[in-house]
Image 1 (cartoon, rainbow, N blue to C red):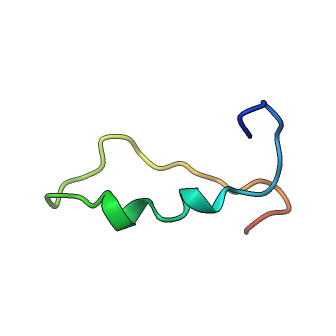
Image 2 (spheres, helix red, strand yellow; image 1 turned 45 degrees about the vertical axis):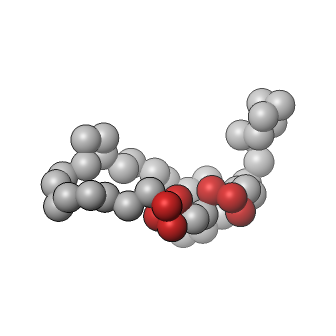
Length: 44
């Protein structure tokens, strides 16, 4: 969903590189589980 509330099947490229800066500081289980599922017709 974009900032105007429109749902689309494309993602902003700026969302792809989170792990360049945000890296875990210790070896622990995630606090929030990752239940991401790609949109139908996009990705898997």
